[in-house]
Amino acid sequence: MQSNDPVNASISVSQLNRRVKDLIEQGIARLWVEGEISNWSRPASGHIYFSLKDDSAQVSCAWFRQRQRGPAVGFKNGDRVLAFGRVSIYETRGNYQFIVEQMEPAGEGVLKRRFDALKKKLEDEGLFDSGRKRDLPALPERIGVITSPSGAAIRDILSVLERRFPAVPVLIYPAAVQGDAAPGELLDALQTAVRRDECDVLIMTRGGGSLEDLWAFNDEQLARAIADCPLPVISAVGHEIDFTIADFVADVRAPTPSGAAEIVVPDQSEWLHRIAVFASRIARVGQRAIEDRAQQLDWLGRRLAASSPIATLQRSISTLSQLRTRLATAARNAISGASHNIALLARALNSVSPLATLDRGYAIVKHESSGRVLVDAADVEPGEDIRAQLSRGQLLATVKKVITDE
Image (cartoon, rainbow, N blue to C red; front, side, top):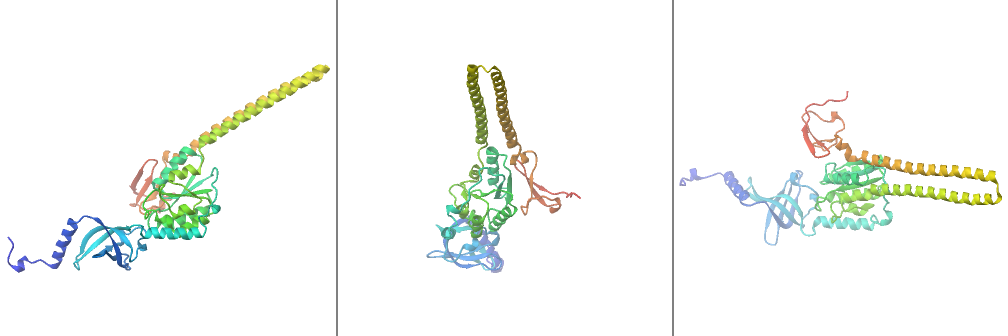
């Protein structure tokens, strides 16, 4: 039974706001809200405050910095957006507000307009022209891949390369492929590949995602660097239906990461077949040469028999026998050499597979917090977390002790 004593029955303003907050947050699940941005503000803290409105109402919104990802700064007053989040109350003032966890353009949206504007700009400058695109090497000596070393894209590429032509080595230039830092890291990786000049073709790739997920590959500076790259570049970003600015400026666009691997090397079975065909041709040419010599010598023998030059005939017969022996030996050696080369090539193809290194027990070890590949034990401290990429799966471990090669 409630007390009629106002002193004992009362609660503080803070308690009231806390109860209202609990009721609202428990009673309304996370949801999407569509509206038009107004009163957009981004103070030094990095948090974003704005209002979402429609024709008859508006709600205050807060988008905290740690929740922001992608090109959040691209939004502005007047943009229609879809915001996902939860309803809450700012207890200090008792203000009802919507806490945004994710936001994207509604309809065509800002990102689509920015994409179309940059595409038109670069197209007008001629960066998409087919005449400026470079041809891919028929058989690259080394392939460079610019991507996340832990993503599915690199696994797909290595798997296809192992099946098609495992003798070609692969170098990975690691870079983030999503988020605010991704455009800069992709650009740095591309410039590193050009500066080192270790490869004769590059693949820039990542798996599929939304327009926001793939936005790093729509960066203007990165697009211009791809266009200016002296090495041929294959862009393999997302799925077949996904298109980025990188696809248009690259020398070749592949529909998927696996598709890029199919394009960049020939099929080893086709090459082995060609070698076998060449060996067969050599054998046929040798046999024809023997037959032609035999006919010629038979003709000469008939002429000699008509004039009875016995000594000359005997020498010719001896020469014929020697030529037959030499030609037969040469043909057999040619066929044997071709067969030997085929066997060597087959063993080489199977021995230098990029995945074979991992299958032999090696691993790619990275610093867990920074994602950097570790090549020196001195770069990590005891107690820090590391991640080891094995042939199948990964290990997350904590360093107990560092032993350097001193």
